Length: 305
Image (cartoon, rainbow, N blue to C red; front, side, top):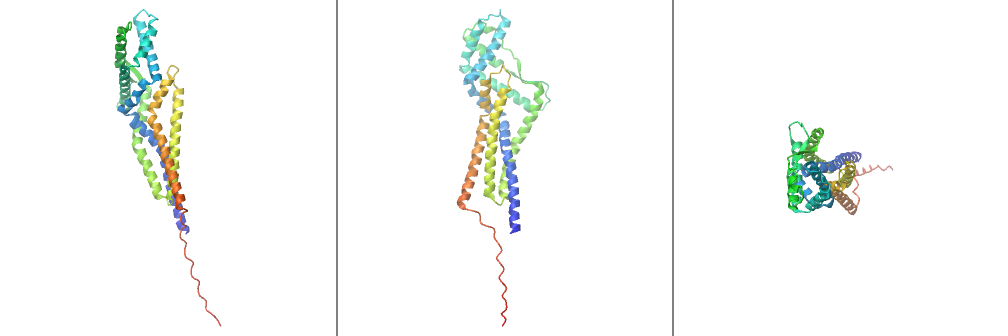
């Protein structure tokens, strides 16, 4: 009996260790997969960002930023008529409600993502910042302003100017991080699944290990959701003062929407597995006791007269 019980304990410990490591890897696997196959896919990124063209906070941020730039350019090329500024901003705000703006927004995001992705995947050593050419967006704005007969709109320059989006000193670190996440996105999910299956198979009390695995997965999903929420607060808090925070929050929510859904899905699946296995165990009743050796028959004694 002692040997049988000791074997069960060893198997349960091995199973618990495998399941514990698998539960730790699950949220990391989701994060790596989201980064490598969600953010790194240009088509998916553009589809995620396109609906933001109708977000009021994003439209307001774009109108402010583009309006300030247009007024600055006009002031350098004209006498600097201050009365032009409000008309320019009104025209650009009206432009953000048109289909042309949505087209320009999509083109700008595609150009931005292509530039960043090319820099992260490039094998050549980095020698400068990551830049993007927003001349197509400026051309769309100019065309709209000219259609509205805005004064001096024909003087707005449409030049192929490289706008830096990632400083040169950060490119190398981001490239290494991207490669690490790209590799982790392939191996972390496979490792987590393999460890979970091995843990359940090795354990003697498989229902108990399944309950533990479900609870661990639910905890991992909850922690990942908490990390997404905390990341939003920290990201918005670290932004410069001139950045439009409501628009930045809308962009963060759009980009992390899939990760948020995946984290709560992991929580729900883990909790469901734990509850189902626990309820099934109660219905089946307690596990049978281990077999015990039958008592040796008593040795008959001889009768003496």
